[in-house]
Image (tube, rainbow, N blue to C red):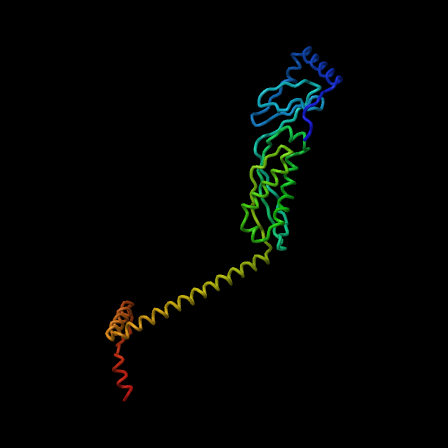
Length: 263
């Protein structure tokens, strides 16, 4: 990290003393140049002759600076969110997908965010894009589609570790959308449809097998009691009559039909 404190030297102290005397002599006028205000969500990093004056940033509220020798940079502490542009990524199983996301971060150390990196916001955005590519490059397509939470957590850990020296705290990373090529979408849809048809055929076959077993058991019960067949005839007639059909069916006992067939 950059050096935050240091001696101004003899020449530097002379300049600071002269600036102080100048401020005192022209007090009614210089007061408007010396008093600065920062909001509750802001902090001010003060530079005196190019050096950071204190280990802690100033604010919120009013603070004092010397004209001509002091300058300051305001740092916003609020959480910032930005979208990661869609990235064309080649997965581990050689499938090209387009993935985008969103990152939430804030400045945790205002002095480090000013002294250690030229533009913390822009640098974090670029790093998020490369981190997304690096993380998804180690995953296959199935993991990208099913383990979004794990990928987001891995990205957050990598980003937080990389931006720690910049005074940035990455609070949350989310994967928004995963876009597949049209041909791959069609292939996956055909595969899913074939799998559903296969499961439907298996279920139908199992149903027919269970129905045949039930019919076998019912035939054994009817064979033991001949009157049960007559009751079944009457039940069938009752079902047909409930549908208001004009067809009339007369059931004939099987023994009568067999008698005529022998003749």
